[in-house]
Length: 249
Image (cartoon, rainbow, N blue to C red):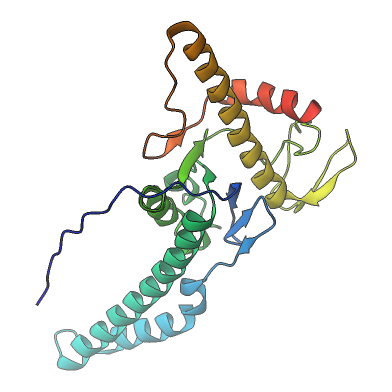
């Protein structure tokens, strides 16, 4: 028996925590701009051996037999177990972020295109990046924090978080970001997360300036970050210039 209950949520108080950029990866599920890392549950990778064993058990049973039905059921139950492990880890991570951080900045990842890479498709699917984004969308509204979405082609990994220098290329196998401008050596994921956080800070200053201009012209304020739901940050071209301006100041 299943029951459906409608719960009315009161407007939450605004979270007073810091702004944090979150860069998602494969080796480490997520790296935050404050140095916090979120490990990947790797549920599918860890359960791959048992999945193969149960898959072979299905193929060895006579089609239409009771033994085959039991083997199919055992395989399906283990798939559900893997899914539950992944979803549980994602719920814990997203709840912790939404409750502790006032603004969370993530990239607009094209997951459907990324899984076309045959070498990385299984590892990417095992992360649950889309589910992570979906959970953050409604949990930030629940707990009074904000979710900002950086442009899809924003070069967060190729930009130095210290001086704003933009590299032309940065291969995936290079895990350390080395800046030729200021000499900074930093983990590439942490560097990307810090750039995402700076992007939100730049956007907040832009909103504050726009709000001040509106008050001077019309005597009315701007909503700023008060609206609910995820906010898409402005275009890549504008943000590249803005990041250089901020970091060079």
